Length: 231
Image (cartoon, rainbow, N blue to C red):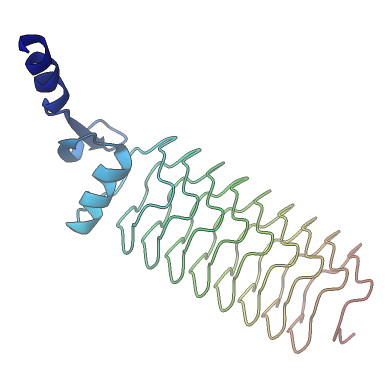
């Protein structure tokens, strides 16, 4: 009986873990303690308490399906972070480094991604409706099947990005760099493409009804079976 009691005591012993979120200079921005704690739990707690997480270092963090609605992650370092299915609705990710991050199926409705670095990020199936992506770096990003309805991508760099079957209805792509991008089957109805660079882009089967292409560079662009193109 004595041995059994000792074993029970071991099982019931609290496994509290404290995890700190630091900025890029090592300053502690937030810390949280709980049983079986994870960086995801800690970050969610910080967001719930409306903590300012500017410049947070979350490199490679596993944040899949995290609830981060309205998070303040301006200038955050999220290189190679796992944000699959995460809820980032209305979050401030301006100037954040999300290069090579996995944001597939993430909810980024109305998120602020101004100047964000999304080089080769995985955004397959992500919801970016009404997101603000002015001057964002999306070079080589995978945006297949993404919802970008009403998104502001003006002056964004989408060169060599994969936007196959993306929904870009009424999106603002004024001055955007889409050189070499794959827009096959994308919905660009009512999109603003004034002055956009579409050199060598693939727009095969793209719906361009009522899209504004004034001043757009279409040199070498594949427009086979494009719908609604006015030349």
